[in-house]
Image (cartoon, rainbow, N blue to C red):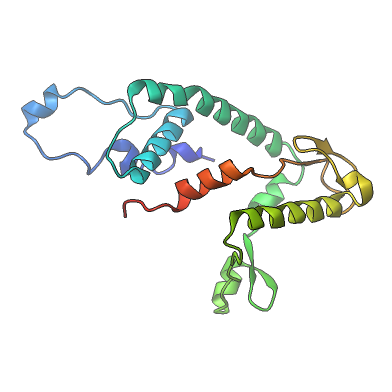
Length: 201
């Protein structure tokens, strides 16, 4: 299967349709701009595009700031590749790939998306009923505890963030479960600002 960063070769990465028409001489003199050649290049372009869309002052990051993004992006892509290679070796991976995506539709029916839409059903809407961040984080902490209790009933459910546990009660097929911990207040505020603040378009 073609890697996701090579699919489509969209106009965004190729620059098609974004340049103004000029005479051939000017085009010949223009310095050639290299296309993204790796997954890190594509990830970096995506990050810079998101920053440009979110920043209303038209201030572009400097070259040194862009270079600082490369090492963490390279490390992230390496972890992703290692995880992908590891998952592909699991026995149930091929069957999971061909399984249709399912959503919870009205009347609590878990159906493949195409089947639900054929029946003119609408997926259940997700509503966040709390607006206060502190209250929301408190509720999230309680939900995290309930989720851990489902995996490991009793005192064993209280495992520290950043650690893994085996011998899961409700998901015997899984080798282990990892507890990433709660998102802290600053991280939640930053995510909300990046995803939902006012932006162009």
